[in-house]
Length: 510
Image (cartoon, rainbow, N blue to C red; front, side, top):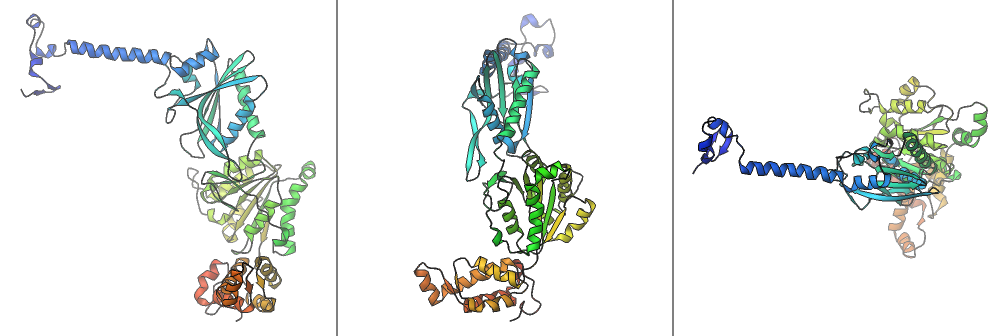
């Protein structure tokens, strides 16, 4: 029999029949809401599920372990919460582990499952009928985070309960990291104790140990980029500290000495300068054409500060400048390196009223205070793009050094520096030095590599290569390489190496 449709939906026609004893009470419209045995059974099952759910929540393993450990009144104990940005997760774990290792403390670690995308805290876990949907007790979830150069990592807890016993006292801690790898998300540590003062004391001690055992101290770290090495594809990576000898910095003596005095000298005499009321914070700008040695100079300076914490920012990571300054302030003496700062002169920070990232950087520099031992090392190929911003915010950069194109004496030093183990015929070097007027260090480096390729491809070079000895590079090889680089058809290559574009003829005398 086909069902009939009413405004209430589909139902069987038999549902409209009335019991003879009920016909006096009203019409079919009243009778259709009268519960039948099946309705009573469904309602009973629903009530049973609610009752069982409440009972299970009351006896949930997470609530049970908390109450068994903390004792009576666990659901009314105060909870204190602290937070750190996610990049500090490894330091929070190390600080917490150091606190747990304190004399007289014992602890048990309880893993929490199903915590992803679930909102809960210690207070909710301890309450009767708390929110336990999807949560359970299981293995401890961890993540391996960078903890030092050379690929060092440390397992860090993602979400777990720590049940601590100390003499007659009982505490519980909930450590939880965010679900997503956003560096601006926070890792939280909640502490429950018999009184708020006790919980605050514990949180303060953990926070202090997080600073004392900070793995960033004295290291070179990068937010969201790579420099002088290779990152690990994470939001923060450890880099090897460069080792560049002073003799390999081919710059005019007075220029490099001025930079050394401003960067290394202030750090060397920080104590006496501070005692004399002189500020320590400084900003140094290295500017000049591409390929003149700005990155090379940075590497030398970084190598001369083996105890300094160095934070490298690049690209979109400039939005982490506030975090970088926070790290630098806590772990001074420290250095913040920003290469190609002109690239952010026009970029704007989201949600900050449209101010350029450069202004954000300058404001953060100013906000550190004068007495902090922090150096800002900035480089740019376009100093003209920074002049207006720097003029509007004077004092942030207090030393600017222009790295010039190498003169004849410097080009000779660069040839000796970049020849490596090449057996280079010195006879043709004066001509090479003359013809490379106006080129950069990068040009000289590529010139010698290209000359080595010419040597490897000819008969004598190939024979030497088969003996695994150094290539012998003659004046003819260097001239051929120089002709190719100076050819007008290779103008773009020359520009990319920092040279000036030719105007109809190759750069320099032929």
